[in-house]
Image 1: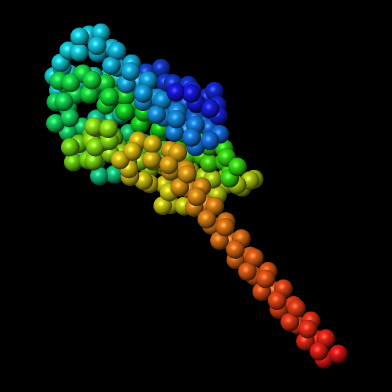
Image 2: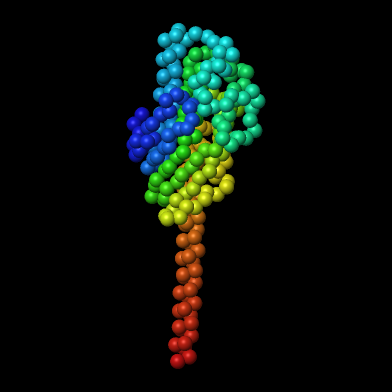
Amino acid sequence: MAISNVSSSSLAQPSKPGTAPLAALSFNSLDALEAYLVDVGKKATEKYRAEFQKDGNQEMTVDDIKDTLKKRFPGYTLTDTEPKEPVRGKNLLYIDDANLKKMATDADYRARVMGLMEREYAGTAPTKLSTADGTFRSNTTGSVFSLSESNPSEDGIPYSGMSSSEGVMETGPRDTPLPSDFLSKTSNSSVNKPGSAAWLRELIEKRQADKAEADKRAAEDALKKASTERAAKNGVDIVV
């Protein structure tokens, strides 16, 4: 997939999948950000699929799967209970028994899940987005990757993600803190979270709506002032 308007720093990958810290990402468009994350997941899935096929798509035990995930994704913390919310400083990973067994016996499913994990982890990197509406920066402080049959399915994978972030929208020489309601999101999509295209698009739309409303009020005030001044002037003329 071709990715346009992406800085060179955004193409840097960690030496080992899931290893923290991640290189900062920088984009000049929302589409470029979203394309980058999708591309990361696609390439990772293809990489794992080729690796497993080379090994004859061998089945694994659940314990083998857990050990593999711990070794290959040290940036995640595997947990036996499904987290209710993100924990600061951690990227929590929860996979229920049904999906652990499926990953153990189905090599293609295993590759797809691990590719999604890489895509999710890539999205936790510090992100800068420069647009005509300003420069947006976000930093993920904690995340949850949940793979459970209780979640809605996305492309055959019952995944749900949560994350918390800190960020600012730079509107000039001063930094404006992001509204608190933008700093914590829950989504079934790995690209709809703080720092993602969908999240930033929502933020931009809100800022644009606020600006449009402020401009409308200013125009109404100006019209009211002009009308008042004309009335006052006409009153003086009548007296004269």
